[in-house]
Image (tube, rainbow, N blue to C red; front, top):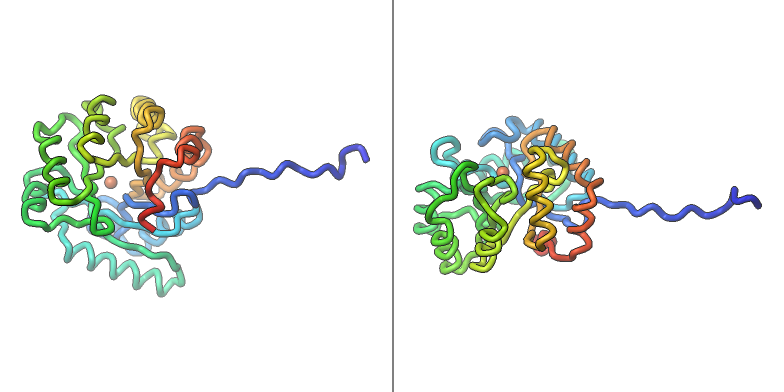
Length: 244
Ligand SMILES: [Fe+2]
C-alpha cells in the first residue's frame, strides 16, 4: 500500500553472452607464458564460462625467440586440456589457433602457408611494443592477397600506433582486436585512454580476454562494469559471435 509491494525495475544482467566467443587467450597448458598446467588452464576456462563465454579459441604465442610453437605443440596441448576438462566434467568447445608474433618466422609462415588460423580464415598477430615494424602494411597486404584476414591484437597497447594508422590498417583489410581488460586500466591509464579512443572511433571488430592467469580473469570480470564495454555491446559492431 505504501510501496512495499511495488515491483522492482528489472536489473539488466550483463555478461559476455553478446560476445560468446573468446578468440584470444593463453589457456593451453605449458607451451607459453599463460597457463602452465592443466589445472591452471581449468581455472581460467571456468572463469570464462562463469562470465558468459560459450566457446574459447586458444591462441598460444608463436614467437621464434621465446615460444617455438607449431601445429604439433599446440594441438598436443589442446588434447591434454580437453582430456582434463572432460575428466572434470567441464564442457565448453575449445579450438586452437595462435597469436603470431611479427618476426622473420611469421613472414616465413605466411609464405609457406603454415599459419595457425582462426576458423580457417583469420590470422591473429601482435607486434613488439616499442617500434612499428617497417613492413607492417606490406605484410597486411600479403596476408589479404592470400585470401586471409589479418587481425591485429591489442593495438591499444602499442604506443607507436596512432588512430590514423589503425584506420589505415583497417582500410587495407586488417581487423582490430581490443583486449577487454584494457578498458579497466589493467595495463595503465595510457592504454585505457587509447582503448577508449579506439572504441569511440568505431575501430574495434573483436574483443577478447588475452587471458594468461587469474589476475587477468579478475580484470575480465571487472570490465563488465565499464561503460565502454556497454558501448561496444550497443554498437552491434563486434564480430566475435560469427566465430561460434
Ligand atoms: Fe596474447
